[in-house]
Amino acid sequence: MIHQPDIYVASLDLIRLEDLINTLWNKHSPVRLSLEDELERAKIIDSFQLPDDIVSMNSTVELWVTKSDFPVYMTLVYPYGMKKDGSTLSILSPIGTALLGIKQGEEFYWPGRDGRNIKARLENILYQPERERHYNR
Image (cartoon, rainbow, N blue to C red; front, side, top):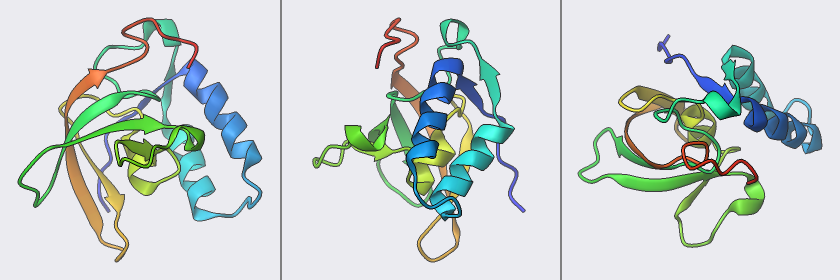
């Protein structure tokens, strides 16, 4: 079993994510269960006190995926915030769920399509709404 790092979720994100979960019609879908599991193990922090080095919803990050020769830049979004240009990552994707609440510099894992775990390192948080005091997102 792979050890996942501790995660920290902003209190306002928790409210919005719980609302999102309640809109998912299939109560037993792997996506829903995975997100519920992550939120259950998360340490909840007041949104106004979230440290700058934690990934929150709508954060833009730089990742290094194992076996990749270049960084990946993505913004973690709710499903309605997805863009077709590939710059966004849905919270309902395996990597999106795994990325939420990760601290800058940590490695994390998510299940690939073949069932094997994929490893990435969170190199940098380029934008975090809480750091910029953008709470209405």
